[in-house]
Image (cartoon, rainbow, N blue to C red; front, side):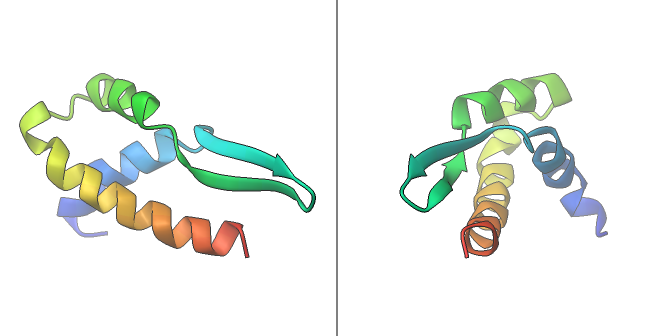
Length: 72
């Protein structure tokens, strides 16, 4: 793993139980991560507010790939 990806990877792992779910006729569908929880975890991991924009962009990219795979 590239050193620049370490923070977002740690954040991703810490958020693995923070998916928003919707129950429908076909079962549960993930709609995305719980962003208030992500901010709480960000602070707990010591990710500075000034770095949040870049980390969040990376997290959202990971989220989009995961949603495509998990909801397929």
